Length: 175
Image 1 (tube, helix red, strand yellow):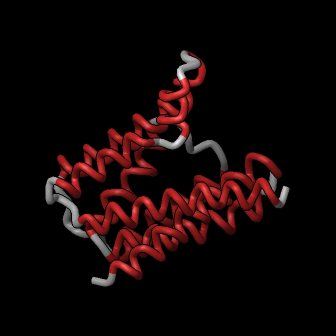
Image 2 (image 1 turned 45 degrees about the vertical axis):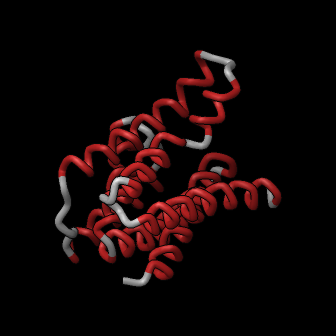
Image 3 (image 1 turned 90 degrees about the vertical axis):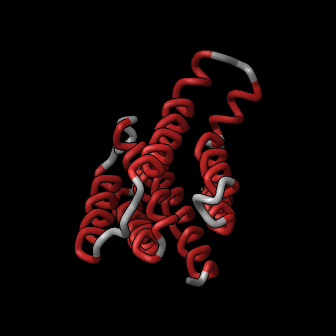
């Protein structure tokens, strides 16, 4: 398996995910947000189908967002439906429920913390910790260090996150 291909899919997914959100939230552009969401779904599904390790991450993110009620636009619904359809048509890799649960809970904690922590504390550390969603990063790192995941999947996830942040910066500069 080529981690280069996987890294590219992670980066595309992160970039399209953030750009889709920003076009919907900041510009109210449902069409472009949906197109970018579709590209995100394709990249995420391709990574999910390509690697069981990636599947844990790309399944956990939408499940965590769904539980946290962060699927808040039609572009999210279309993206999620397309992702699910692709995964069901081509078949998910076999996954360990406990590992998937760890990933889901870390994604859920990040989403809840991202929304709630700034409202309850002005502590700079905790605000930055949840602004940049570090719970899942730590969980994926620990899974990699413990040998459950290859360390390169953690690198791919960091590339996803950097691509997500980069998309936000690019969007801001062009707005």
